[in-house]
Length: 324
Ligand SMILES: *Cc1c(COP(=O)(O)O)cnc(C)c1O
Image (cartoon, rainbow, N blue to C red; front, top):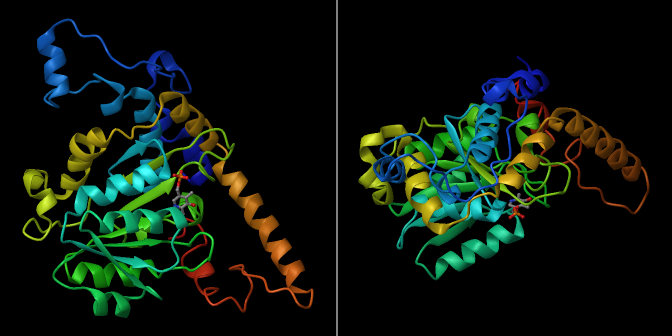
């Protein structure tokens, strides 16, 4: 199935109760069980099921499965906002004394968060240009994560995902990519070698401007080094799923940044039109950029202009997740 078909007929659109074509909005805080024993098992993650919306809800599950399918991940976790997703993902991996290598062109909110994390002892070093070489130069024994935006908002810097991932992996460090601006329609970071993909779903994924949200998709392939990544050591028995389990049953659940069920439903139906919206958005922006570029005295920053410093990535990395 290609992108738009997958959105309408993919695995994540099947299997709803009573043959319904969309998920119901499970607008509840808690779920009933026949016995206390059953409820306790679900709460303790010993039995599949839902107990309390902060730790799991079927509408969130439907949205998570859909984005995970689009990104080609092994699972996803939806959050109350993009910032909740980024902070939960980082805190699942980094502890006091750890370091993050970050791309320089980051969203303002993310820079502010990384500044806040300094007070918790998590230090960030910024690379002016994130490449395989800059990662190799900045990596040290305290580095626990490389974090970058695939296309940075708003500066439009692009990272060479495969090369950065390779350099990080040489040192047993995962690459976390914020792909909000690219969306799964433009690029597939997991297929290019990234380990975890994060989106603010408030933007193109929702598309209708009706709810704030975020999501974290785990590629499930990274080989965690449990001596280095002590935050995940307790989850060693889950192997490549250690990050997902640590996130879901620990940090995400405890920070309390779950997505609201109604927002999960709105984001789910918004995503139906992601493919055709992105096509039109890119076409409009390309025409506008080229028209403005004709006017003397105006400097235009847009990736499809041939003189743009990151123009080479348009074909190699940004021509659609189907191609990558
Ligand atoms: C908007 C945005 C965020 C933050 O998301 P919210 O949903 O506003 O919390 C993070 N990263 C990028 C690239 C964004 O554009």
